[in-house]
Length: 136
Image (tube, rainbow, N blue to C red; front, top):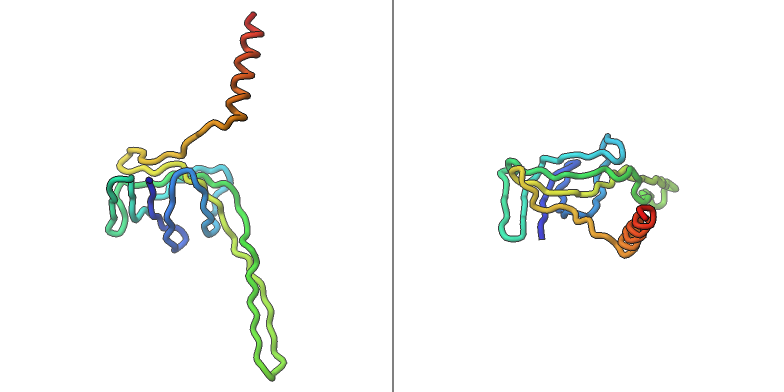
């Protein structure tokens, strides 16, 4: 299992290729590809490379999927016997990132697999049959 520990938004996050993660809002547009170079650790299944503090030559390729807001958190403050009550809500602004690949010294350690589903496989066969019919 290939994974990396990255730092973004002042937080550390364990990421794996092919999975998505919600991080604090980034200023990039959706469908933008980014290269994160704040990599603290890279594990390729056999050995781990630990940085001091960062791993040299390590990057994580991500794609910005969407911007969203987290669920609402209610902050309620009350002082007993004083008739003082404050109710506030907060929704954190987030960016959803899809991890495409983890690179170490220019070599891709883990890349998101592009498995074909049954539906796409069937549609590929249908296209091939149509191509044969057109060719005849």
